Image (cartoon, rainbow, N blue to C red; front, side):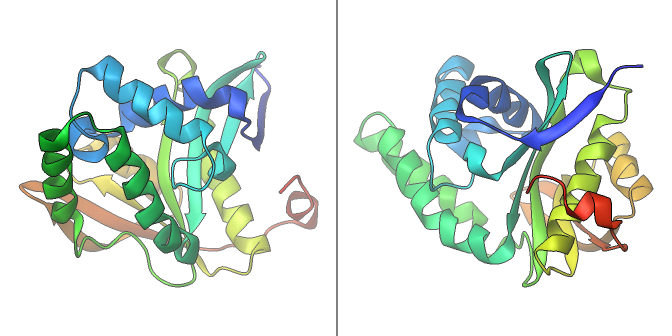
Length: 211
């Protein structure tokens, strides 16, 4: 049986974390700006490797298996998420090449106005992904349990996330882990569920694990 170790991410993990985060988005160019997949991925990798933005490795937990990153979760408290949105947008805007491209990026940003990700007191699971070669080992569920632990020890009351409403398999994964849909959300013609999970009592041994 493979041993899965959940630990805080490090800057050196930026490349694989970026690949995993990239794989979770329906429309990467909508989130990170125009360009080829390679250009967008490079942009995201730079964000992950940097500090002070919502995609930073600072807010990531990685699942390690056989010495390599098998999965990742980005999770931020609601308050910190709000504080980081503006700096993240500014960093992304600077990464866009040319005046017109910057304008297009800004016009896309407006699509997110009013899009609700989380509420006060929640730990927001922004991204969760597992490498294809490691799927079926329960890594996603292990990372979601880590989110519960982080929320619990930081005195938050819930975990929340946004999921593509048409991705039945992922919705079922979250439902199996105690999440339920509380709201429907839309970006353009794409529909999403906002899902929330209350916190169970965390055993003392798990509370004391590396924060």
